[in-house]
Length: 295
Image (cartoon, helix red, strand yellow):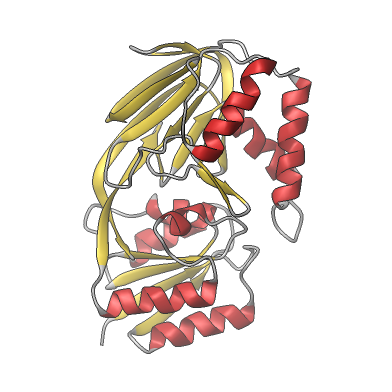
């Protein structure tokens, strides 16, 4: 009988004992299941390295942070990955067409495992850290940091808190963001958002389209406003909601394998919603067809 590993973040917002048991029972219909609960930051990476050579698939029941940790522990010959949404947003599985509901998603992924239905996708990497769908310098990284600071025992704040944090951040800057970094071969910009999938993220049920052309099979896509003033904000909002009519003040890079950025001062960096601290430079790279996922 096939063997699978189930890596669970028990602290994720949509994870509880009842749902873990359901996931285990659903997987047990198709394979022998070994469940591993994460205990600390980085633990999922360690677990992925430990189990990847001994199983036919790895299932992860977590939020995007857990998915990111697992993919950072997988080698080139790793078994297929099945991501069950257990976070408040769960951008990665939703972007692959997996149901947002953990129960429905589990049934969908068990069927994919039974039928060996996989998809080979590209992933990103910045300064050695892999990412599954997005990475950013300054703007979204600052938001991630502020949201993380509001985390409680119940998990990260929800969409209302995120919107309030966003508005407060823009208000503090008076809607003005000046150039503070240089993208090699592209130019100076106020911040940079890098995607290897669309949507970039979700705000509730609303998809945010930073790079609507991006696909999981291609390289990296990026947008970088040269500068932002209050009059630009409505244009930017329309663009990220509709994915159409990118403002002229926004630089764009499409389907590249490498992007180098130098900062005027240390700036916050995030990947898949995880704060990586401040950096003075960032090298974004694409790993094409690096990961097999169940869909």
